[in-house]
Structure formats: structure tokens, C-alpha cells
Amino acid sequence: MKSENYINLTFPSRSCNEAFARSAIAAFASQLDPTLDELGDVKTAVSEAVTNCIVHAYPDCVGEIQLRAWIVEGNTLMIQIRDRGVGIEDLDKAREPMFTTGGCERSGMGFTIMQTFMNELKILSQPGKGTTVRMKRILGRRGVRA
Amino acid sequence: MNLTSFLQDRRLTIALKGEIDHHSAKCIMEEIGKRIDQYLPLTCVLDFKEVSFMDSSGIAVVIFALRREREFGGVTYLQNVPAQPLKVLKTAGIEKIAEIR
Image 1 (tube, rainbow over the protein chains, first blue to last red):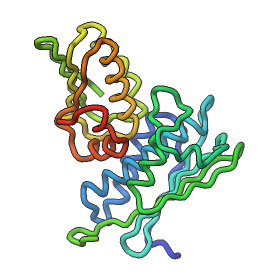
Image 2 (image 1 turned 180 degrees about the horizontal axis):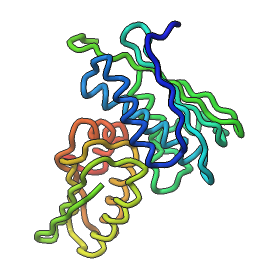
Image 3 (image 1 turned 90 degrees about the vertical axis):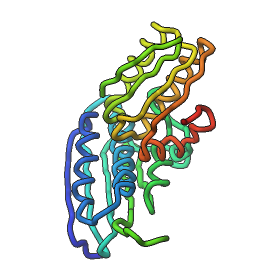
């Protein structure tokens, strides 16, 4: 499917880049004239995905996170967040609400929030090779009732 | 993230400010823990009025405050929660364990 516009960002897995990733996706998504609620949903989902890379993919080192976003069909935002970290052994377990290996500082709600706040969520992971999260959100439907 | 607190009649109001994410959550938890330990309030109020963004790290912050306050037999509630943090909190069902006013 041909994309109409795209961004491709790579940054290190430092926690200060969580805010950067949110700001970058919000700036890119703004061209679709989203509502504040829609923008909040996209920023939250990206924050969760990037935080997962920082906390889980690269637990003992700093690695690279790739954030790609592109627009298709006029008002559909596609987002892909990729790491080359440790990968996820049990995807079904990882997707369970409140399940976390991140200790008491984490809530285990990351994938649940991505699933709830976006229209589609796909996760591909290979232990030892990394994880790719792909999300889709239709935006800018002001005045359109689902 | 800055936070300020106000104590009156053993009710501790903690006003959270700015963005709550994994980057800021640890400092916020430490600060909330310190203030609860210092003032031993009967009621702890987390005020979200000036929170501009919150992801699931904020859920862990709320659960931390709830647990710490319960250790002293106190209660915690949340107030002035804007739409974006509210949606995150409701996704986790926080309203079942802490009142949101």
C-alpha cells in the first residue's frame, strides 16, 4: 500500500527519549487534523511501546529503537516500533493485563493500553532477535460518528 | 515532573504536575513515599489537575501510593483527573480500588 507521507527515526533506548518519541509522533500525526483525544491515544500507545523497548528489550544496555510512521488511505496512521533486543519468550503471557517482569515500578498494562487505544495492534517477536510492534489508528474523523 | 503537597487535618494533598512516564515515575514514587512517611496522613489525595500526560507508569504510581497509605490504615483518592490520564486509569480499572472524584 503506497504511503502518502512517512517518518523514520532511530534513537537510543534512554528513558529521556520517551517524551521525544511522543512529541515526534504527535507532530507527525497533526497533519491528519486529529482531535485532542485521538492525539492523546496515539501518544499513549507510542509511549508504552517505546518504554517496553527501554525496560524489557534492552534491560542491561542501551540499544537502538526504530520508530517509523506513515500515512495511508488519507487518514490512517500506521506506526511501527522496532528493537533488536532480547525478544519476548511468551507473547500471550506478555499481553495479559497486569503481567509484568518489570517489578513494582511497572503496571503490566502496556500491551493492553496499545490494544485499547489503537484500532489494530500486531506484535512480532523472536527471542534473542528483537520485537516489532505495529499499530494502526484512523484519525481526523471530526464530526463522524462511529 | 514537580510535585507539591499540602497537609491539613491529617489530609495530605499531593499535586502532581507535568508528564508521568517511566522516565519520571521512579522519582515521583520516591517523593510520594517520603511525604506519606513524614506526615502519616489519614487521607492521601492525588491531584492530577496539572498532569499534562500520563502513560501506564502512572498506574504504578497510583498503586504505590494506595499501598503505602494502606500500610497506615489510610485511604487514597484521586481528584481533578483530565481526560487522557483518566482513560489510562480506567483501562486498568483503578476506579475499582480508588475513588476518583
